[in-house]
Image 1 (cartoon, rainbow, N blue to C red):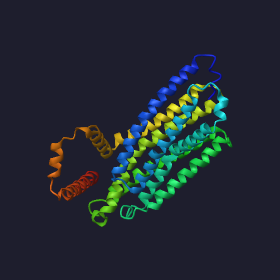
Image 2: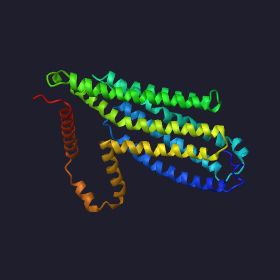
Image 3: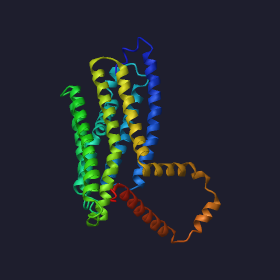
Image 4: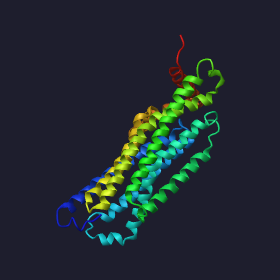
Length: 334
C-alpha cells in the first residue's frame, strides 16, 4: 500500500480510521467464528471428515486475521512505505496471510471432493469413516494454497490467471454440488429407495444419503458466497497491481473480512441443528453468571441414571427424525 502518495491529501487520516473500523470488524468476526468453531467441536451430526475440514477452515481464519492485525499494527500511522518493505515482521505477516487467504478461496472444491467420496462410499461411509480422506484432502488443500501463494508473491504469472483459476475451481465445486444433490435426491431416494426396495438398504446407507442431500442444499449457498468474495478480492488485487489506488487495497481487506463474517453466519443460519446449538451456547454463556444455589441443589439431586435417560431420549428423537425425513422424501403410492 502506497501511503506516500496519500500524504498530500487527507486520505492518510481516512485510512487510519478505516484501519480502526477494520480492527473492530475483525474482533466481531473472531467472536462469530469462535461460536461456529464451538458448534463444530461440540456437535457431530455430520460425517467426521466434513467436520474435520470445516474446523480447519475456521481455524485458519483465526490465524489469517491475526496476521492481518499484525499488518494493521505496522501500517497504522505509518507514512513511510520503505520501512514496511524492510520490516521482517510485516513481511512474515503478509506472506502468512496471503497463504491462508488462498486456503479460504479454494476450500469449496476440496470439501465437495469429500462429499463426492461420501456418495461413492455411501454403503458403509458412516460405519467406516475412512478418516484418511479428510487428512489427505486437507494436506492437498494446504499444499495447493502454498503453491498458489508462491506463484502470486513472485509473480510467476499475471494476477488475471488467479481469477481464472478461482472461477474454474469454484465452478467445479458448484457443479459437483449440483451433481451430488441430483444423484442422491433423485436416483437413490426415488428410484432405488422406493417402497418395495427399501428393505434391501441398511439404516447406515439411508442415513448417508440423507446427509449427502442436506449438505448439498447447505453448501450450494456457501459455494456461491465463497465464489463471489474470492473472485471480487482478486479483482481488487488486479486493480491494485495496475494502479496506485490505495482504496482498492482497502477494498480487498474489507472483502476478506466480510467473507470471514458471512460464511459462518450463512452456515449457522441455513443449518437448523447448528442454529439451535449456537442459540443454546449463547444462552449458556449469557446466563452462566446467573446460576443460583437452588439450581445447583436441584441438579445435585438428579438421579445418577439421568445421563443414561438423556442418551436414550436423544436416540429416540434421532431415529424418529430420521424416519420422518425419510418418509417425507419417499413418493407415496396410491
